[in-house]
Length: 115
Image 1 (cartoon, one colour):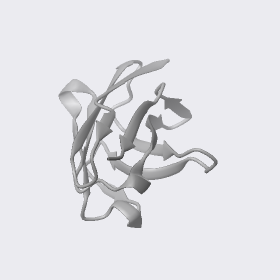
Image 2 (image 1 turned 135 degrees about the horizontal axis):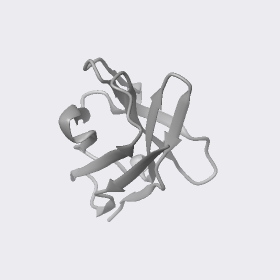
Image 3 (image 1 turned 45 degrees about the horizontal axis):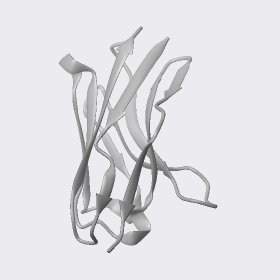
Image 4 (image 1 turned 180 degrees about the horizontal axis):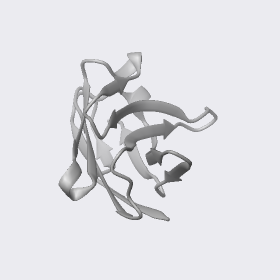
């Protein structure tokens, strides 16, 4: 089992920044991928960004150049730095951990971009 604890969501004005954090604990495999998905009301959950334990990253086109994903393997923690936030970034953001045969989700943290 793997437990994921997220933090860092909140309310921010358009153009602002937030940083999300997610720490994994439990049966962590050295080779894994951690990332962030989001789900807005009435929409499907979508992959925002992820990063492998080796440091390879993926970004959705909608966040390229604005969001940066990073990780600290010693702390089993992944970060999502979100800059130049837009109202359309409003969603519940979910941390994800996956390794061979395993896929775990965090509880989700709300990000609201609004005036």
